[in-house]
Amino acid sequence: MKHLLIAAAFYAGFAQVAAQTATPQQDKDQKTWYHKDFATTKVYGVNTENAYKFLESKGLKPKPVVVAVLDSGVEVDHPGLVKNMWKNPNEIPNNGKDDDGNGYVDDVYGWNFIGGKNGDIDVDNMEVTRVVKKYQPVFEGADSAKNKENQAKMPEEFAMYMKSKEIFDKKSQEAKQNVQLYTMISNSIPDMVKLLGDKTLTKENLATLKPATQQEAMAMQVLAQVANDPQVAGKSAAEVKTYMEGQMKEALDYFTPQAEKGYNLDFDPRKEIVGDNYDDYSERKYGNNHYEGPDAKHGTHVAGIIAGLPNGSEPQYGVASRVAKIMTVRAVPDGDERDKDVSNAIRYAVDNGAKILNMSFGKPVSPGKNVVWDAFKYAESKGVLLVKAAGNENEDIAEHQYFPTNFKSPSDEKPFINNMIVVGSNTNDANVLKSSFSNYDKKMVDVFAPGSEIYSTVPDGKYEYLQGTSMASPVVAGASAVLLAYMPNLKPDQIIESLVKTSNASANNGFENLSRGAGVIDVAKAAAYAYNNFYKADSPTKDVKTPVRKQKSKKSIDRSKL
Image (tube, rainbow, N blue to C red):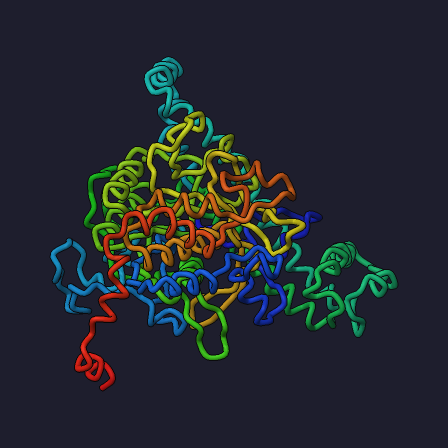
């Protein structure tokens, strides 16, 4: 599931939301904090600029690296991204033909596995909903004897069904309650404006107000919570109104699709829109080339973190802005991604030249996990690095699995592949370093990277702050692209080792128990580690670069100046 998180949180006094749109101060320093050097600023950024300086000081010349963003879609013509979008060199745009013979027509910037001739999927079910719908008649049908027989025959499926049913019952009820709650708060906004009148929103002013009705009392309760938010505290009634309307719209936009569709056993958009046989995991040639889709906010934000370029007055740039090209593979709806689409997205990206795949999504159950694991092994066989978000539930993922995972069982000592790095999220506050939402585990999470209050590209040529491990993962994907661009011989496991072993460790908050790296990645340190331990040892060309330049004739030098 793509976790777009809601801004107001709505302050523990009302509800707890899994995802948050961050709204910090809009200054240049804040917009680019994740690039900072911890050694000089004491802010746990990833030291982007010093990485480039180190690599260039060694005389290394970068080669472009294709990074596939497996996500909700990307606005390919965003002014901060358009120059760094991958383009299929063997496909003629918009001629209605499969010029390169790969089975996908007009796949110029990538492909969309959640669309078809009848349009594109926006909202889909949660995976637990699909599991409950499929297996409820099998394990809890009218024939109790048959139910017990099926439970005995299919123990793995039955365990998944019971887990899914528990989550479905809890989350579907929460979604409905949150729709009711936020609708009620939204309806109380006029009373907030009336109560404040010509006063500003301060605790002192609130103490002087006297609600006359139950609705006004509700409005007062909300105002008391909102007054703690520095984004709106001290503002006028009109400004509070604008702020609250935006917050409530975002909250309802998040929870209403869950209540009405995500956790609705009767909702299924797949057949009418995509038109494939979902149960046929071997089917690969379906979808369309609608790279953006109905809602590309999440994927566009992720792409900007990897390879965004400064645009006009906007200072935002991606970690690998100088070296990466973004391939977009749409596979993640508003809801849970389907295993068939994830598997096919991985194979498409690998077959079309992506060397790094960013996967900012996840879910608690995975009926087709073996198909996804096969795709992981395929990527491993092709030397492709997989970068995966750890998830936003503030849980230990050894106890609460977050699929797709590189451990076939949490009890396994090691992952079954060597080409995946799993990423948790950190803040820019060294005293409270772990993002409150980030999942963690000393064995199953590899590193942490900036994921709170991250400023990046969003559709319509705009920029926003978002936060989540969805934002931390592309920071690591970008960092990996920098290493691979300058040292193309690096293998995925060497990139992972370089990032893990050079993380800036934190003694605060028990960070040593949250990931293998026990800290936040540092791209410059990782570059030095990779150069000294892998590149110098393995590269046959490193020692001949300077002599080759010295051997240029005067004629060739003159020609280069023309």
